[in-house]
Image (cartoon, rainbow, N blue to C red; front, side, top):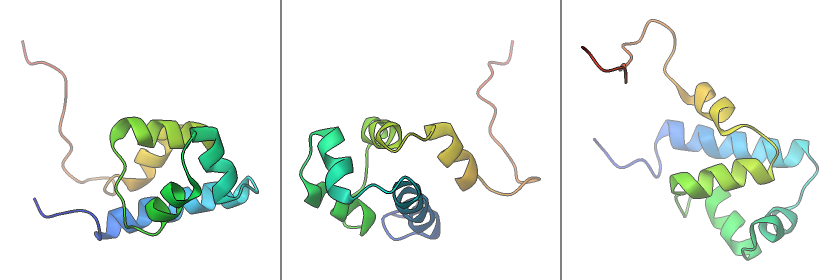
Length: 90
């Protein structure tokens, strides 16, 4: 698996996060304050300089008042693509 920092889906995720922030008329500083982070944290995330871990992603989505699952759904491959089942086979 190749690195994802500059992948098309990573860029798409960043665009979705920026759109969500702007739709709620929030500045980077306001979102950062909700997360108790410096504004530069949001700038680096949105600019693709910094990756989010899953907990940071959930916290950021929550600060933007958007369900993390909604963002993830928009990043999934198109229908018909092979999906991995997490159900155990008994």
